[in-house]
Image (cartoon, rainbow, N blue to C red; front, top):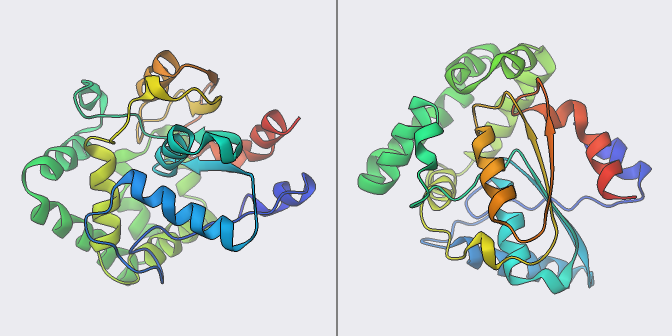
Length: 247
Protein backbone atom coordinates (compact mmCIF):
# COMPACT_ATOMS: atom_id res chain seq x y z
CA UNK A 1 0.00 0.00 0.00
CA UNK A 2 2.68 2.51 1.03
CA UNK A 3 6.02 0.77 0.41
CA UNK A 4 6.08 -0.62 -3.11
CA UNK A 5 6.57 2.61 -5.04
CA UNK A 6 9.40 3.77 -2.78
CA UNK A 7 11.10 0.38 -2.89
CA UNK A 8 11.03 0.33 -6.69
CA UNK A 9 12.49 3.84 -6.83
CA UNK A 10 15.46 2.60 -4.75
CA UNK A 11 15.82 -0.60 -6.81
CA UNK A 12 14.81 -2.76 -3.86
CA UNK A 13 12.78 -5.96 -3.79
CA UNK A 14 10.37 -6.45 -0.89
CA UNK A 15 10.10 -9.94 0.58
CA UNK A 16 7.39 -9.98 3.25
CA UNK A 17 6.84 -13.48 4.70
CA UNK A 18 3.94 -14.32 7.00
CA UNK A 19 5.03 -15.18 10.50
CA UNK A 20 4.06 -18.68 11.74
CA UNK A 21 0.28 -19.01 11.95
CA UNK A 22 -0.40 -15.82 9.97
CA UNK A 23 -2.15 -15.98 6.61
CA UNK A 24 -1.30 -19.27 4.88
CA UNK A 25 1.79 -19.89 7.01
CA UNK A 26 1.67 -22.96 9.27
CA UNK A 27 1.69 -22.35 13.00
CA UNK A 28 4.70 -23.63 14.94
CA UNK A 29 3.79 -24.32 18.57
CA UNK A 30 6.05 -22.63 21.11
CA UNK A 31 8.49 -21.15 18.61
CA UNK A 32 10.74 -18.35 19.84
CA UNK A 33 11.88 -15.07 18.32
CA UNK A 34 15.24 -16.66 17.54
CA UNK A 35 13.54 -19.70 15.97
CA UNK A 36 11.84 -17.43 13.44
CA UNK A 37 15.25 -16.21 12.27
CA UNK A 38 15.78 -19.69 10.82
CA UNK A 39 12.59 -19.35 8.75
CA UNK A 40 13.82 -16.08 7.28
CA UNK A 41 17.25 -17.52 6.50
CA UNK A 42 15.61 -20.51 4.80
CA UNK A 43 13.58 -18.16 2.59
CA UNK A 44 16.50 -16.00 1.49
CA UNK A 45 18.66 -19.06 0.93
CA UNK A 46 15.99 -20.56 -1.31
CA UNK A 47 15.99 -17.29 -3.26
CA UNK A 48 19.81 -17.37 -3.49
CA UNK A 49 20.07 -14.07 -1.62
CA UNK A 50 23.38 -13.90 0.23
CA UNK A 51 22.80 -10.53 1.93
CA UNK A 52 19.61 -8.61 2.58
CA UNK A 53 18.23 -5.65 4.47
CA UNK A 54 15.80 -6.18 7.35
CA UNK A 55 12.98 -3.72 7.99
CA UNK A 56 10.11 -4.17 10.42
CA UNK A 57 7.22 -2.06 11.67
CA UNK A 58 5.72 -2.38 15.17
CA UNK A 59 6.07 -6.06 16.21
CA UNK A 60 8.19 -6.61 13.11
CA UNK A 61 10.87 -4.38 14.61
CA UNK A 62 11.56 -7.11 17.16
CA UNK A 63 12.35 -9.53 14.33
CA UNK A 64 14.84 -7.00 12.93
CA UNK A 65 16.62 -6.86 16.30
CA UNK A 66 16.60 -10.64 16.56
CA UNK A 67 18.20 -10.98 13.12
CA UNK A 68 20.79 -8.32 13.95
CA UNK A 69 21.66 -10.23 17.12
CA UNK A 70 22.08 -13.64 15.47
CA UNK A 71 22.77 -13.07 11.76
CA UNK A 72 24.36 -9.64 11.39
CA UNK A 73 26.80 -11.15 8.88
CA UNK A 74 23.89 -11.57 6.46
CA UNK A 75 22.47 -8.05 6.82
CA UNK A 76 22.99 -4.98 4.67
CA UNK A 77 20.93 -2.76 6.98
CA UNK A 78 18.51 -3.10 9.91
CA UNK A 79 15.54 -0.75 10.31
CA UNK A 80 13.20 -0.80 13.30
CA UNK A 81 10.13 1.42 12.75
CA UNK A 82 7.79 2.09 15.69
CA UNK A 83 8.99 -1.20 17.18
CA UNK A 84 8.76 -2.85 20.56
CA UNK A 85 11.43 -2.83 23.23
CA UNK A 86 11.94 -5.69 25.69
CA UNK A 87 9.23 -5.38 28.34
CA UNK A 88 10.34 -8.36 30.42
CA UNK A 89 12.07 -7.09 33.58
CA UNK A 90 12.68 -3.58 32.18
CA UNK A 91 9.80 -1.69 33.78
CA UNK A 92 8.56 -0.49 30.40
CA UNK A 93 5.11 -1.98 31.02
CA UNK A 94 4.43 1.13 33.14
CA UNK A 95 4.30 3.36 30.04
CA UNK A 96 1.93 1.13 28.05
CA UNK A 97 -1.71 2.09 27.55
CA UNK A 98 -4.07 0.27 29.97
CA UNK A 99 -5.34 -2.22 27.36
CA UNK A 100 -1.83 -3.28 26.34
CA UNK A 101 -0.75 -3.47 29.97
CA UNK A 102 -3.70 -5.81 30.58
CA UNK A 103 -2.64 -7.96 27.61
CA UNK A 104 0.92 -8.06 28.97
CA UNK A 105 -0.34 -9.32 32.34
CA UNK A 106 -2.56 -11.93 30.69
CA UNK A 107 0.36 -13.08 28.53
CA UNK A 108 2.33 -13.82 31.70
CA UNK A 109 -0.42 -15.27 33.87
CA UNK A 110 -3.32 -16.57 31.76
CA UNK A 111 -2.24 -17.51 28.20
CA UNK A 112 -5.65 -19.04 27.39
CA UNK A 113 -7.48 -15.83 28.23
CA UNK A 114 -4.86 -13.91 26.27
CA UNK A 115 -5.57 -16.06 23.21
CA UNK A 116 -9.32 -15.67 23.69
CA UNK A 117 -9.03 -11.88 23.57
CA UNK A 118 -7.19 -12.17 20.25
CA UNK A 119 -9.90 -14.46 18.91
CA UNK A 120 -12.40 -11.69 19.60
CA UNK A 121 -10.33 -9.15 17.65
CA UNK A 122 -10.08 -11.51 14.72
CA UNK A 123 -13.85 -12.05 14.72
CA UNK A 124 -14.51 -8.30 14.74
CA UNK A 125 -12.09 -7.85 11.82
CA UNK A 126 -13.97 -10.50 9.83
CA UNK A 127 -17.51 -9.42 10.60
CA UNK A 128 -17.52 -5.65 11.10
CA UNK A 129 -17.00 -2.71 8.77
CA UNK A 130 -13.54 -1.11 8.53
CA UNK A 131 -14.81 1.87 10.52
CA UNK A 132 -16.19 -0.30 13.35
CA UNK A 133 -13.02 -2.36 13.49
CA UNK A 134 -10.92 0.80 13.65
CA UNK A 135 -13.13 2.08 16.48
CA UNK A 136 -12.30 -1.05 18.51
CA UNK A 137 -8.62 -0.05 18.48
CA UNK A 138 -9.09 3.64 19.22
CA UNK A 139 -7.95 3.35 22.85
CA UNK A 140 -4.46 2.47 21.58
CA UNK A 141 -4.34 5.38 19.10
CA UNK A 142 -2.87 8.82 19.67
CA UNK A 143 -4.37 11.87 17.97
CA UNK A 144 -2.33 11.54 14.75
CA UNK A 145 -3.11 7.81 14.51
CA UNK A 146 -6.83 8.30 15.13
CA UNK A 147 -6.88 10.82 12.29
CA UNK A 148 -5.08 8.46 9.88
CA UNK A 149 -7.29 5.51 10.86
CA UNK A 150 -10.42 7.49 9.95
CA UNK A 151 -9.24 7.60 6.36
CA UNK A 152 -11.37 5.06 4.48
CA UNK A 153 -8.42 3.53 2.62
CA UNK A 154 -6.35 3.17 5.79
CA UNK A 155 -9.29 1.77 7.80
CA UNK A 156 -9.85 -0.85 5.11
CA UNK A 157 -6.13 -1.67 4.97
CA UNK A 158 -6.03 -2.27 8.75
CA UNK A 159 -9.06 -4.55 8.65
CA UNK A 160 -7.78 -6.53 5.63
CA UNK A 161 -4.38 -6.85 7.30
CA UNK A 162 -5.98 -8.16 10.49
CA UNK A 163 -8.21 -10.51 8.51
CA UNK A 164 -5.15 -12.01 6.85
CA UNK A 165 -3.38 -12.37 10.20
CA UNK A 166 -6.33 -14.32 11.66
CA UNK A 167 -7.04 -16.32 8.51
CA UNK A 168 -6.21 -19.60 10.30
CA UNK A 169 -7.35 -18.59 13.78
CA UNK A 170 -5.78 -16.89 16.78
CA UNK A 171 -2.89 -19.27 17.49
CA UNK A 172 -0.40 -17.36 15.34
CA UNK A 173 -1.23 -13.76 16.29
CA UNK A 174 -1.65 -14.50 19.99
CA UNK A 175 1.62 -16.45 20.31
CA UNK A 176 3.49 -13.93 18.16
CA UNK A 177 2.42 -11.08 20.46
CA UNK A 178 3.04 -13.09 23.62
CA UNK A 179 6.68 -13.80 22.79
CA UNK A 180 7.23 -10.07 22.27
CA UNK A 181 5.85 -9.38 25.75
CA UNK A 182 8.05 -12.01 27.46
CA UNK A 183 11.79 -12.76 27.55
CA UNK A 184 13.26 -12.36 24.04
CA UNK A 185 16.17 -14.74 24.54
CA UNK A 186 18.82 -12.09 23.85
CA UNK A 187 19.93 -8.70 25.17
CA UNK A 188 20.01 -5.42 23.25
CA UNK A 189 23.51 -4.77 24.57
CA UNK A 190 24.77 -7.82 22.67
CA UNK A 191 23.77 -6.43 19.25
CA UNK A 192 26.77 -4.76 17.61
CA UNK A 193 25.19 -4.15 14.18
CA UNK A 194 23.94 -0.64 13.38
CA UNK A 195 20.20 -0.33 14.03
CA UNK A 196 18.20 2.49 12.43
CA UNK A 197 15.42 3.45 14.84
CA UNK A 198 12.45 5.56 13.73
CA UNK A 199 9.62 6.50 16.09
CA UNK A 200 6.81 9.04 16.35
CA UNK A 201 6.80 11.27 19.42
CA UNK A 202 3.03 10.87 19.86
CA UNK A 203 2.96 7.07 19.54
CA UNK A 204 1.04 5.46 22.41
CA UNK A 205 0.49 2.10 20.68
CA UNK A 206 4.22 1.49 21.11
CA UNK A 207 5.28 4.34 23.42
CA UNK A 208 8.21 6.62 22.63
CA UNK A 209 9.95 5.39 25.79
CA UNK A 210 10.46 2.07 24.00
CA UNK A 211 12.52 3.74 21.29
CA UNK A 212 14.47 5.79 23.83
CA UNK A 213 15.25 2.64 25.80
CA UNK A 214 16.56 0.89 22.68
CA UNK A 215 18.63 3.92 21.66
CA UNK A 216 20.23 3.91 25.11
CA UNK A 217 20.94 0.17 25.33
CA UNK A 218 21.94 -0.77 21.78
CA UNK A 219 25.66 -0.56 21.00
CA UNK A 220 25.14 1.19 17.68
CA UNK A 221 21.80 2.94 17.20
CA UNK A 222 20.91 5.76 14.80
CA UNK A 223 17.73 7.18 16.27
CA UNK A 224 15.28 9.49 14.49
CA UNK A 225 12.24 10.85 16.31
CA UNK A 226 9.40 12.29 14.25
CA UNK A 227 7.66 15.08 16.12
CA UNK A 228 3.84 15.15 16.19
CA UNK A 229 3.67 11.71 14.56
CA UNK A 230 2.13 8.50 15.91
CA UNK A 231 2.43 4.77 15.33
CA UNK A 232 1.35 5.00 11.70
CA UNK A 233 3.93 7.63 10.81
CA UNK A 234 5.54 5.17 8.37
CA UNK A 235 2.58 5.69 6.03
CA UNK A 236 3.69 9.30 5.48
CA UNK A 237 7.41 8.91 6.18
CA UNK A 238 8.36 5.66 4.42
CA UNK A 239 10.08 7.31 1.46
CA UNK A 240 12.01 9.60 3.79
CA UNK A 241 13.04 6.66 5.98
CA UNK A 242 14.17 4.61 3.01
CA UNK A 243 16.13 7.52 1.59
CA UNK A 244 17.91 8.01 4.91
CA UNK A 245 18.88 4.33 5.14
CA UNK A 246 19.74 3.83 1.45
CA UNK A 247 22.12 6.68 0.70
